[in-house]
Image (cartoon, rainbow over all chains, first blue to last red; front, side):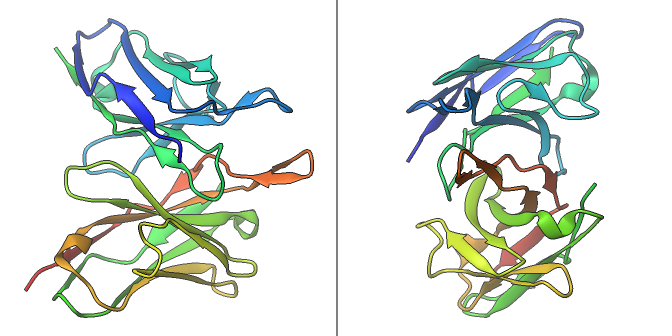
Length: 114
Length: 126
């Protein structure tokens, strides 16, 4: 099983600043024939279901603001939120979907505004 | 776009049975698989299992195999999550999520969870 570990568990960032969330997988999620990383990011606001933000590690879902970006390859990935807005307060999860049938999620990172 | 509607919150006693549902709609829903995800109070997301509604092919996480049953009715576009013997530890929010299976180089792999239902809160308490 692939274990996903996020860091930090929580962070507090000022409005307009940048937030960086890291995700590390216990083994590579890069599928070499495609050169694609099977890694997604989700945002879960209080009282709401998760929402897909990023897939294939760096592809922004339709409608997601450009201040959200994903990067990384292999085992190390980063979600960056630039120009932090109040509505970005949420818990963020990474997910690997490299393995089938099971996928696995990171433990989540809570983002708050300073 | 796919829309997922889930059944309402449930309060049940331990030992009872329960079935909750997830109904999908939208032009392309028929191509999507359904995954069920558990979120215990104050905790993260856990993958429970998935089903292809077109033929009811199902996979389970080892953690949930034998504890729950995932099913689907292709004619109604509904997927179901069933318990026969609820425990207090089943108290959680249960989400259904839809994904398109990703097939490449002759292999069908997993994919990201594109659409999510609002969740069904299940409380198991005596």
